[in-house]
Image (cartoon, rainbow, N blue to C red; front, side, top):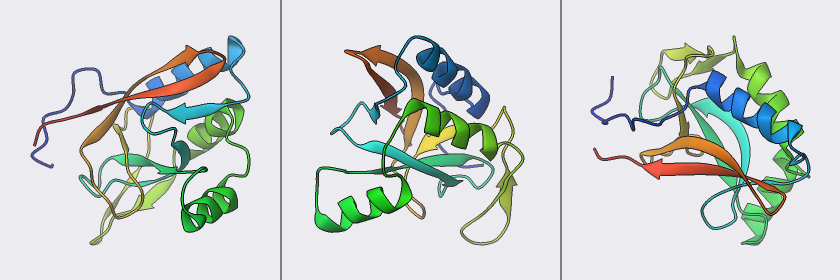
Length: 143
């Protein structure tokens, strides 16, 4: 286990799936982004901070050419429906750790925000609708 203090509102994968499903039911199926810098979610991988947890990656669709290329290769049109499908399919998947080991994702697996191999102490705390966009709410935790 890492030495990170878990944020009291940190979502598990199952809770995240529930929040995404709620957003989809309320009409936010077309657009989804993180609450920082307009970044969009990409895919799930083992968390670098704790291999028994997973992280949701991000990309900048408005930024550098390399970032834009990676984002479009991974996910041409970020949508709630696509991310909800990816999250549901992550349950039961074994994500390899960075120095061996790994984690099989369950509904109770804690969820972080980071690209593969990176660690920023950022948790997912919710999904909210804002002007027709589903916004993934995050919080940085203390080490």
